[in-house]
Length: 105
Image (cartoon, rainbow, N blue to C red; front, side, top):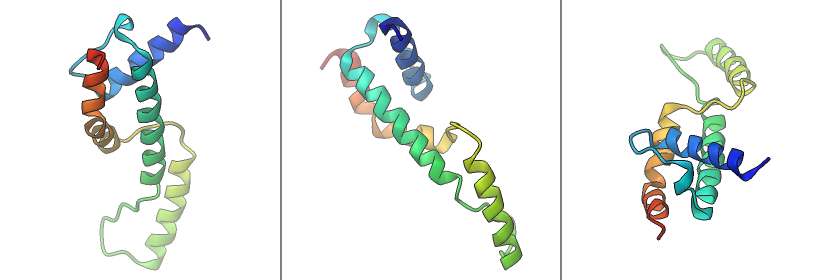
């Protein structure tokens, strides 16, 4: 993969986490590449964990727990989706690093 394709992916990742401040290919630095990779990996790991969180709508019973176990397994096989709560949490955690990297500091 060429560095242009890699930089496009880095820009897409950073723009996903920070949609209010877009970043262009010309602003991508090595620090931002590393930051994007770290943020994406952390978000995927956290989203995988979120797949396991039960979603009760009433007082749970054993039958409900079994159904939720099956649903959690189904969600975990779904792919690389990132929950909105995970996106905002990861974005908040890395906000300072992102802005410093964007300024070249």
